Image (cartoon, rainbow, N blue to C red; front, side, top):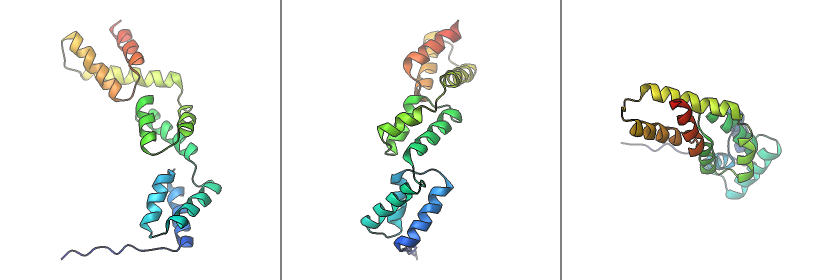
Length: 160
């Protein structure tokens, strides 16, 4: 016998407090907060009002979210610009906020990340055929979101 968990509903005031705590824990997008608020059983007008209120109180800031996202993905995961932009678009972030977020990328560190990924992959790649090897390394780096011209330059530099 399977019992469904009864979804607790909150008043707009209670929901605002819970949403503020949700935003304080980590940066969130408006869409993530909106989705969360609907699970509280709120009306669309209440949901939008709470989102506006959180924005006014600087609890919800998509530009700040984009900056944090970029720092994390390029700094820790060593993602390239293309993959970062794709991720931000998937989260419903505006073009303006994406541009602001991308300003967090230090070009020198970005190139270092690309070089480190290439060297690491090159050391573990078993392919002997130079053409196929180059192609595999290229596909790998492009799947990480790096631009093809930068990938080609890095591979040429590696081959000396």
